Image (cartoon, rainbow, N blue to C red; front, side, top):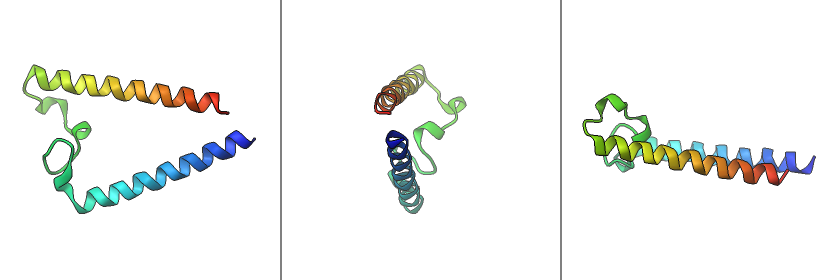
Length: 80
């Protein structure tokens, strides 16, 4: 049961950080990762990507995100 409480606590802390980041980004849209205003790179429609290099970078970033999510999930499962 202790692991479950820890997971809930970690979840709540992550939500708090995410909400704080949303507020921060909402107040200053000029600091987006891609240097453009109005959104993050992962929110950009793939239809607007005009060259192969940009699509390859996007795919690489998605693969890294998936890998990181899998690693973190496995860590959390081991700690239950």
